[in-house]
Length: 114
Image (tube, rainbow, N blue to C red; front, side, top):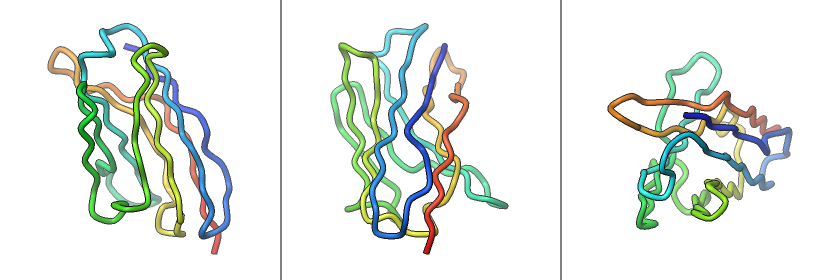
């Protein structure tokens, strides 16, 4: 399993970023894909999920601001982040549970300045 996340950066509060995660090494189209994030000094948390059928779920703190989507032709999952807040500052990881093992990509850093 290989997961390559990109798109992070520095943005002002209220701004937007779009993260991408290119996946390979497994049957992408039939697997649920997750976005986790880990803020400085905090535990990693599940931020967003998209099933193989396109059903999405979000942690309460990002509902209405973040949208995850997937392209099963490009084997890529996306996280559109709008109305960003300083509390969204974290390393963002795409992840998949495949053959009972959870794999994470290398992460991409999102920094939101106030």
